[in-house]
Image (cartoon, rainbow, N blue to C red):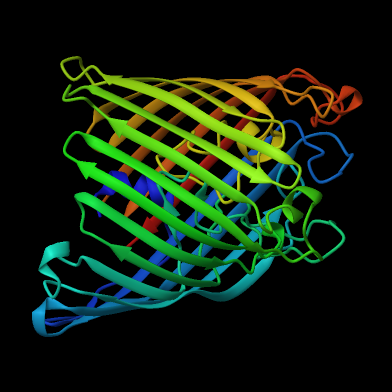
Amino acid sequence: MHTRKKIASALALFIPCLQVSAYELVNDEKTKLNANLQAIAAFMHSDESYSTTGETSSGSKEWQEGYVKFGFDGSQAFEFDTTLYGGLSALNSGTWGDGDAAGFTKGTERRTAIEDAYLGWRSGNLFSALGNNGIDISAGRQEVTVGDGFLIKGDALNFGDADLGSNFDRGGAYYLAPRKAFDKTTVLRIGGSSGLRGDLMWLKSDNRAQAETELAVVNAEYISERGTLGTTYIKGLDVNPDYATPAQLERDGMETVSIRGKSSFGIEDLNLAFEYATQDKESGRDNAWYLEGSWTFSDAPWKPTATYRYSRFSEEFDPLFYGLSRGYGTWFQGEVAGNYAGPFNTNTRVYHVGLKATPRDDITVGALYFDFDSIDKSQSNLSGNEVDIYAEWMVNDHFMISPLIGFFKPDRSTENGGLQTGSNDLNPYVQLIVGTFF
């Protein structure tokens, strides 16, 4: 995997002094077996706290998160280049210090458990009309993504030992969200990496913070050199009422349909993207959508890219299993707002401007601005503004550092409909993520 894709998907990895090793155990013509390791540490400080879980104490929070994920993946080739593949991994995670700024963790969380455990089969050139590996079927515990993660990007909500009436603890590391695998999956992918292709999926969560939701997913895409056009249908099959919020109870039977696309229209420095999703549930119909455009100044020093995005999530929209997909700002919009203060991709309009540049091949720097405007302010008013300034430094192929400073200013405090405790003062927020991976 390219190093910049590693940043976007893993967002940094663990303690630099940790002694680790990873290598190919077997690599011959037909058999491959690899030992893998990811390790991440994050250090955070927030001047303000948020009553997202009902906590009322105000003041600063300072905490640390970390995880180590280790395991194996491999494949065995057969006739017609068909391949049997699989993976097995375990994950150890924890939170230390005061716990996060929203109170989802308390700083006492520790957990070691199996993360990935899946088997799959690819068709090679057995069905030539479908292209190389035109059939890919897999099952087990694994992360699953649809599109760019606007609706589904793994099962990555990682609560800790928060007092929510039941035990929702997945081992902490709420911000890093290391546990992304759905507990049970069956995924059938049809078609290659270009042209018309599709997916049929059954996904079952064991995450109590997601009410142990069960989903059926049908996805179809057309991929060409100029871009991608796709559509997705998601049917809620079941939830566990013992852990569900009133909104999550409606997932049983809820239908979500989306259409999305991205293209440069043949213009090298241009990138345009959109997605529109509509939900039909017992209480009515809701929707969410975004329009995004970016331009890279490829002839300028550092090749800066400027981005503008408008997104809107209706009053009762259920954001399902959205997650980090293309780096900071997708789809956790704002490091403070997206993780601790809300609005968490529901009942809001978000105006976003971003700028990033690459002063060196191994360094990316960027600045992000978000303007949040709650739609139904009688429900809650989580309007506010945030600026985040960050860097991503790939020290080498196996080690990276990513510092970030953010400034979040909510319109309201808990006293008049917001979530920031004590006041609506400007909140300076600082984080440092470091890690290694193989």
